[in-house]
Length: 207
Image (cartoon, rainbow, N blue to C red):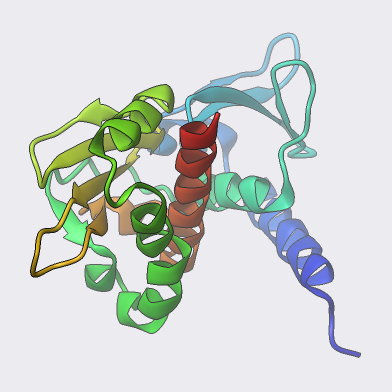
């Protein structure tokens, strides 16, 4: 029987937990740029979208402040980050999604999931775009008509660049990644991360 999307996510979540349980949590924390402590209980503190999440060991449950559990896609991204992190320093150079490993395979879906959604919401509103970015902790960078950098995980930075357009060209958005991002997440997860960022920006813009 074909699995539902939820079943597929649950299978992937269990696999990620099994894979991470095989690794040394101290080394995982070091490579991922996180904090691990074994007192009074073993846990790793992982910043994600500006909030600290507790990853408990050895069961690998994930909770935010107050004990709330994030949704399954967020948990998957966090677990995959911890599994794949290899300690490579940031490249301090932006690359497009297509330049990531196998990025061309996922690029059409990524464009619809992230840049096109942001452009549709903020294409003619640089002030609204800037306000939404600042609400999410974005730091202004010098590209396009407005651009912001986001540190979504300790060693995964993304940039969102707004071009307002003119009489010849419509507004457009570029979503870019630090060149080392592929050392920390599979490209498919980076696409998911881009979609999450787009959703949070749109929500912040409408708040």
